[in-house]
Image (cartoon, rainbow, N blue to C red):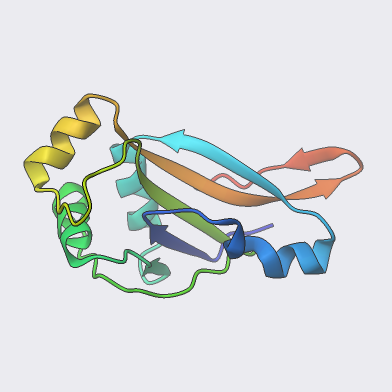
Length: 136
């Protein structure tokens, strides 16, 4: 399956795949941890087909600074299908309610392993073997 678009998001929910589960009866979701350089390469490779689903202006601004790409806040519902890959910006600890992180705080959390990026894709099943689509 060929990836046609990439969605940047700061969360993953099972609600993102419910349509595909209905179509396939089951869904296999593949998570791969990726580094910031890989995120930059993916965004660059899919220019024009990258959609932001980053819900908060502060997060979008910091991601713009980290990646060097203009990422806008965009509160949309995300549907993951077989032609779409997600890049998930995941904070691995619970922040105080209403906390908006600065670029420096995000960099510190990243350096301490508290923020990670994941590539998320639906995997097509073929005779008990799966194949993956490489974005890199």
